[in-house]
Image (tube, rainbow, N blue to C red; front, side, top):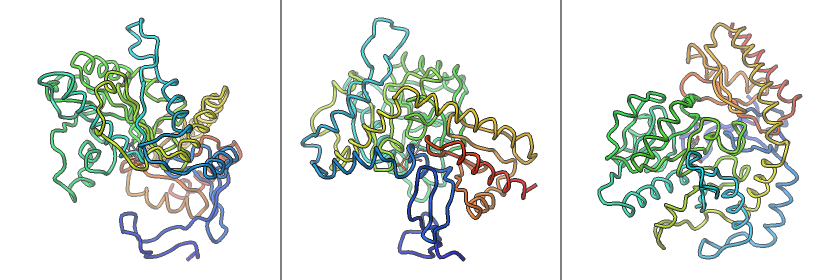
Length: 409
Ligand SMILES: Cc1ncc(COP(=O)(O)O)c(C=O)c1O
């Protein structure tokens, strides 16, 4: 057994009892403490968008660390303000059907530390809107089957999997789950019950299923007609992962709140809950808060990453890489009978296995041969490499994957 495998460390059993211990990384290559290298198709679960040891991130973080590291949210700093400006400026011009809107739809950004916190905040803001904007509005939530929104009690309440919920139930009640892309089920849902509809345009943990454009339009209409807050959880799909800043844009989804986290600060903990004026106008001092959320170092790094992602050419390159990735994975679907289909979009890709039982072995063999991959749902081999992965590393990783798949034939 490799010296890089650490057994039974004093870490809760949530993640198992054996850990591969990494030492360092360079762009899309990781090195464990024994010096063995791995191509990284996981990016810390879709987090390290600009890879490891990125010069721009290191420079910005170091400069900010030397200036000021923390102030709490009773005060603010330039990086926080700059990031909030960048994010709101990139936001859609809202309801495109109402042509008179020209200003960005999102006018405020609530910063937290993690995806679950971003969603926790979104649910709270939706309830604040429901309670303060009108008389008899419902406070419940609508969500999709197989969705994953996080592990704190609120976000877990709107998460589908019973496996995560049952051990800690009871949770917040009042959430209904409906099947994705089933417009009849949506229209049959009693809108008077809900403050918000929360959904992932592409389900990251739950199997990489995507909403259709027709469904997005039906959801827009349902939420707009009933004044229900539409929350797009883009914690995994956002900030270029699927080829655009927000994946919602690609489906025509028009959310009232967007939540972002994983790649936002490239590996430092940070989340953003984007709010429109109609909600922010109702927020009062003390409604929500966080000691650490949106610290100056995280925000300085996130602002730099945001600037990289919106630089002309960056997303174009991501598209070229992802097209190549898609073509190669399609060829695996053709070659191996035990693969049902390819799922995903952009640099968030999956191979759906016909038989889920083979998945753990596949992930383990890939790792043994120097490739880190992920799982999604029960039968999906998920891949989310750094957006900056180069062709040589992508090919190397795909080569390892091909060898591992061939062994299963
Ligand atoms: C879509 C989505 N929402 C929320 C979360 C929760 O994020 P975190 O683990 O940072 O709390 C995740 C994490 O995988 C996610 O994929």
